[in-house]
Image (cartoon, rainbow, N blue to C red; front, side, top):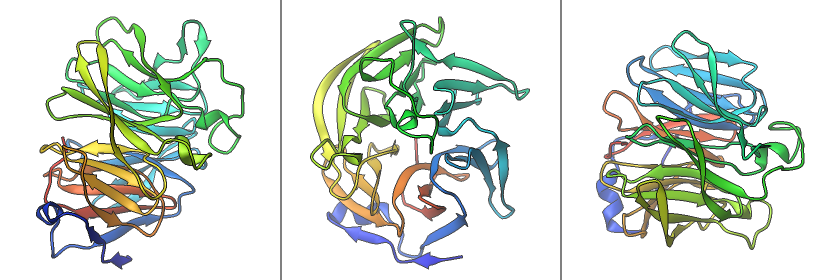
Length: 300
């Protein structure tokens, strides 16, 4: 197991969120592009996606890692719904699915206004049961993370699926490549990453904030920017700090958008989530590896 000293402190407030007696741990190595970690507290395990290898992995602390699902349709982002079921964004099938308790698959969304989605990327569930997901084109750009195809949607949008009716609404339509998303602890704000700079250096590499008013979003503009690489997956802790993936690790931002510091990781980070019994263990999906580190913060 590899051990590293990880912190870059940019603001003294970051010190309160770190622990001096912990180190970054490499939990697993052997992925091609690790993504979409999600913690199952009731089962005591973590699931994550290995997109090009077309599989989902499972890590059980003090036990080890195994393959959870073969032929995973190039799944990317994952989360849980209000009933604890697994929700996944699938590049290969260009859809959002729910894994039922019996293991069967229910399609939540695969089309909007009669046209196929691009390639759903990441998703989050609000307390009212609605599902919000991003739909960039990464999964159809090549055959590596899905299947190369021309987009049918006119934009790369963010969508809301009503928790009661299942109706799908496009709530954001002006992103270059919408990616990770997360609600503030009180759900007054939705943060959405734009990773457009992944293919064009002069394009967005920032996270925007939106005020949530029912089913509508009011744009508050750019909340923070990533200075190395792009923002991909993002998470929020119970105090409102925003934790974002980046090329050099995990960047932590205060609720006012100030960058407090970084957890340096030796691989490009795609996504992250809080887990463990106290939700204070940060799991980090690097390019080939899954890492973890304990922090002085709890995930929502």
